[in-house]
Image 1 (spheres, one colour):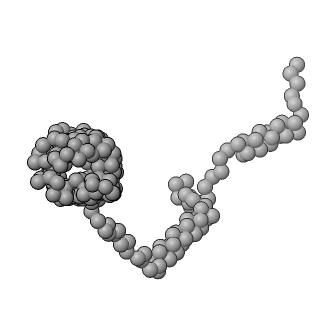
Image 2: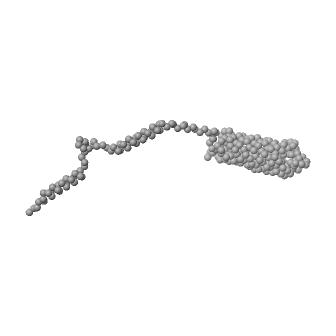
Image 3: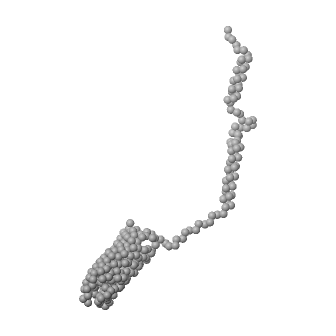
Length: 263
């Protein structure tokens, strides 16, 4: 015999199932509206967009209201800087020289029969040549002859020098540049290009070099030059003692360059 559920129990189960289906089903669009007609963005998003556009418009108006910045004036250099020297040269030339006697030493005593000085001041010519490095250094040699004042004891007193020289020329970026010079060498002295005595010298000095062009240089220099001279008997048969004579030398030089290579 089959048992039937009471009528009240069936109605309660049916109501529970209908309520569950209504909760899980998607909400239907409002009446008269299709599903695609719903708005894509919320009202708050539209308000934020309008606020951002207003801020950008305000910044643009502020930028337009500001005065333009003053024009930037280009810097004007007072002097053109030549390109740095990275070329090797053979450098050679001539110079007009003057030898000013500061103290002849034992060669010319200040009293006695040898008071007349056989080795005074004079002038002459120097010929030099050397190697100019790509950096600040110059190394070379020079031959110089000078007609000296001999107080008429010599008809033509010629003071000859043969020197090894160096210069240090710091790069300051201008065509006129200072330099420091130093060197060592030997000397001979006599009448009419003769050799009656000799000795050795050292020197040090300063100068200024003006680059007229890439291949020509003008300059002036001043050096201090002590000279050790050996004693000898001059043409008047006077014995001259060994001593150190001191000179200051001035030069006005003209030199040219021949390019050897580039680095």
